[in-house]
Image 1 (cartoon, rainbow, N blue to C red):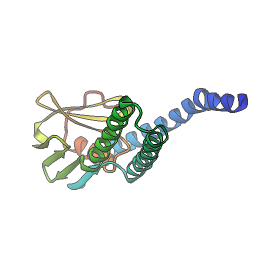
Image 2 (image 1 turned 180 degrees about the horizontal axis):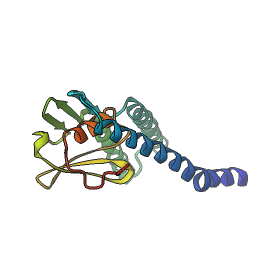
Image 3 (image 1 turned 30 degrees about the horizontal axis):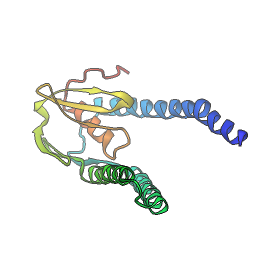
Length: 181
C-alpha cells in the first residue's frame, strides 16, 4: 500500500510537471513556426472550421461513461436512502451532459472575410476588420476581442487553431502579446 502511494505521489509531483514543460515547449515551437509561416505567406486558407479535436471528444466520452457507471453504481449500492445522494448525482450528471453538448456544438467557422462563432447560448458573426485585438492567454489560448468585448477563446488542442492563428496574423489583426521571434 505504501509503495503505491509513493509511486502515485512521485508521478504527480515529479513526472507530471516535466511532462507539462515538454508539452508547452512543443506548443511554443509550433506557435513560432506558425507565426513565421504567417508573416511570409502569400495566401492562406479562407475556409476552415475550428472545433474540439476528436481526441478530446473521445476522452470526454470515456470520462462520461466512467462517471455514469460510478454514479449509478453508487446509487444502486446505497439505494436512494439519502435525498442528498440523489441530488448530487443529478447535479453531476447534468454537468457532464452540459460538457458533452458544449464540446459538440462549440465551433468557429471562417468563410472568406467572415468569422462565425457558435456555442450553446449564442451565435455571433463578425468580420476580421471588427476584431480589435487578440491576446494569448494561459497555455497559448487565443482570446479574440471585438470592440473591447471578449468574443471567444480557442485552445491549442482544437483542430484549426493554427489555421486561425495564421489567418489572424495574415489579416494584420493587432496582437497584444505576440512573441517577436
